[in-house]
Image (tube, rainbow, N blue to C red; front, side):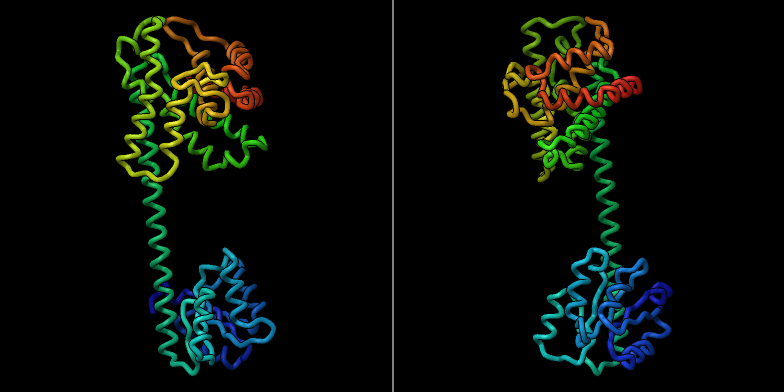
Length: 355
């Protein structure tokens, strides 16, 4: 046997000490053996800080039979992945079916050959190790793909930013603002179920894509050193729809079946919508505006207010706060403004960090 297998622990569960002795002698030298003479003790060992790698479980035991022990093992996340092999004199096919349905991986009928017991144990331990290795490989690959996606998002957002150099660290600041607002709003009973930790993280990761559509705006408008005319502003408004269209195309190419591109599209398309319906591009009113867009609206406007542009000076935090609060119930969602008021100091700190 290999060193790895010699280190494996087998729990033998049987109310007859002689049966435990037989299996102990069979396994001696290949595995470390633990024993339990009843179901209660078996569960204690299985749920301990040092659980066994595999369990050999008798069926016919007083108080708690093997089927009930197996059911409890598989119902507890701490022990449900431990392979269970029933070792019993019960040979009816119905008994075997019941054991396998409860989650056992195998069924050995007494009297048994020691060689068969060792072979079955080796098979299932090897299978478990293989599955664990595959899961680790999948986890590693998933982590790599997530990092690749995050890097791609940042690259796309940075590309949009390079076409509008006045924005500086705008995407980094607004990304942080959105996350802080979402975490604060998460405490609100109305949003607690909608703003799961996973959703908040998606908002954080997709926020940098809010101005992706600016890549499609002509330089004469996007880079104009001054205020836009009414006609030019209409062209600039198109970046919201362009952003969503680009993200929808990306979703189609990648075949994504999750909500990532949906949220990214919502942020790109609706962060200029206003609570009272006077925003663009679709004049959405109130809760018709996706929550991601409502959060981004406050983050985006606050950052624009505290930033210097060629046509304006930067406002102080206090001045920007006043504008945001005054926009409650007309420009901005009231709940988001209330959340902003609770975390305004964190906004100030982020603005100072990413200058």
